[in-house]
Length: 364
Image 1: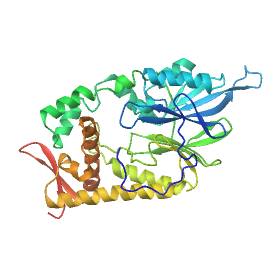
Image 2: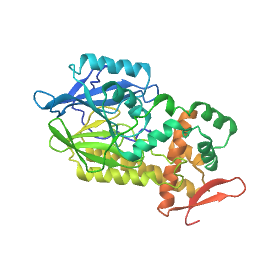
Image 3: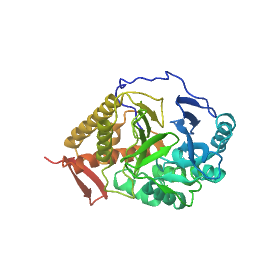
Image 4: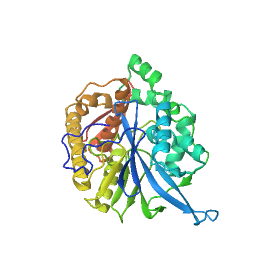
């Protein structure tokens, strides 16, 4: 994920408040904000605990009271301990009734298996995300896999010492997501979801992950945005070796446009990273401008010389990158070049002398 070029004109109803790990802040009646740590440069994830009840004829009132969890954190001892603290201090002795996961990335999916097993609760998520998580959990398919390294090489990142470092450190999806529940309940775009006294609508978004699912409650103007709409950083948009011809940046921008059309500007956005905010329209506009500027700079670079994704890195990223950041940055560089390529603004050619894809403006 990268920082935008300018701060969006957003408002933060909770100011600078951040809930301590293992505790919760109520952001709307029955909607609790949890914040748990991550061992990355992006050092936290926001999780959501929603008061819920479900029909149960065995209960005196005909309802079973409890909670719906939205996203889980990675599987490590610190996150398990934080959840146990939440159980003791926040959950009022009530069970988790279901676990919703917005998408398959490890900070969202990691502890789903543990929470589902601990509470005998079903997993709810989109089927594309569920299958992608199952695949990533059971085979070496991550950024350090042999197919991924071959893909990087085809786009100009082919120094053996760099790729060896990536291979040693990037096959860790299964470390953070050691298991995926054996079954799930499928979420679909537009599907209404009754959670307690609220009805939420599933809203899919493309580009950041295979089929990200956000949740929109129109009655209370609440939007659990996951990673699709963040207040201060731009979500990572990458091309991966499993789908080497993809155009995820175009898909992401189209998803943002649809969200901008559907969501009122004063709704409360509950993002996976950063603080809850208001200001959907200016934030979407700011992200659109951010990517448009990067595409314009990249188009100019492709007019000056044939440009590989590796050549494009200093155009898109002005700061030094470590090996892990390089792997994600390569995915983003390919995504931006593909956006120009699929739009017909550049041509792509593989050089037979070195097997590297390079892009140049269509006019040259």
